[in-house]
Amino acid sequence: MDSDTKRLRRVAAELDEPVAANGLLHRRAFLRGGIAFTGFAAAAVTAHDAAAQAAAATGEKLSARTLMTQAVMGGPFTAYGQPARYERDAVREFTVNQLTPGTGSSRTPHHVLEGMITPSGLHFQRNHNGVPDIEPNQHQLLIHGLVKRPLTFTLDSLSRYPMESHIRFVECAGNNGGFNAAEPRQADVQAMHGLLSSSEWTGVRLAVLLDEAGVDPKGKWILAEGGDGASMSRSVPIEKCMDDAVIALYQNGERIRPEQGYPMRLLLPGFEGNMNVKWLHRIQVTPTPTFTKDETSKYTELMPNGKARQFMFQQPVNSFITKPSYQINLQGPGYYEISGLAWSGAGKIAKVEISADEGKSWAQAALVDPVLPMAVTRFRLPWKWSGQPLTLVSRATDEKKNVQPTRSQWLKLYAPNQGYKFNGITAWAADGTGQIRHVYI
Image 1 (tube, rainbow, N blue to C red):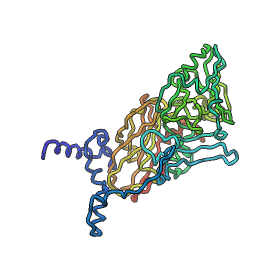
Image 2: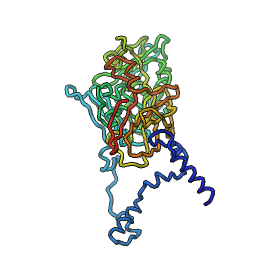
Image 3: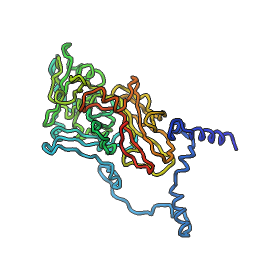
């Protein structure tokens, strides 16, 4: 046996040693490229193997052509590509207010997606009065208020400014709904965490436009207003506007879609989704917050002492496991990959830990590059399931050392029925048959 073979076998043996309870293995299995992890390789059945087994069962002689797809004329070219017709699960689910049909939301199906980028057509929606049909050549962005020179920008004039691209998440502050229920909600990842999406956004930095308008020193806030029927509007601190705020014109390389704010939207990395105003048509520089209905009737934080905090904009550190999860069940004992998403409005994810014993012991997951600030990070960890009942959880820590709390820890911080910015740990319990259900820890 040569030295390389011995080394690979030794490394494979090391990686097959659990680093935490209930079969959680070392993340090096994903960090060391080129290492043949024998346990996972043994679990795979190739198409060639399947064809050979079928041929042996019927006595048919296997030939190279047997393994090839029959030459059949395919479909025609299309002007815009669509998903395969077999991928019917990759769709958004809707929640619509029956009294006001233009108000509601749709959710991203993270449990059937991979990577860190959400396809544009699956990015979650939150609308207050339907999706407006805006003629781009007639749309303008007005910047006025406490500025030296009120300015109006068309789509064409904005396109002449230097553009930049960033991968950033957008998350509704009401994501992770149902955590206040007395019993755990039995729902999939889409229903529980689907008001989160991640895209590459391209546009013009807002600070460039504000500098051109000349912000008065008395201007400490802006009012950002959308061009929808509800005139959805939010107050934003001027510091954020002069930092990383962007007037986004493109999403994942193409023009922003109508439900995402076409022809332009405000992007405030790390801030709650409602502030990323869609169909943006007006920015007013003001000395104080405007206290609009969208930031006084909602998006406050109810405290145990009976008071409510306002203007707590940043989304907290969070994570969830996408597989296995509710309705993504285990198919018998053996090797699996635990995978999920982590993110924080405070910056980059520093680490994600996985526990298979309700937090008594932890294994550190591998973070998939690139790990970016205010973007979702994919994490992975190899796992050997023995077939015994257990509970899987993930816990994220960001670069500012913020740690994701348990549900019980989070509930102690707020008054009953507080409904925003929940970032408590989501727990999935597997029984001896591999069925997954949502539980509280």
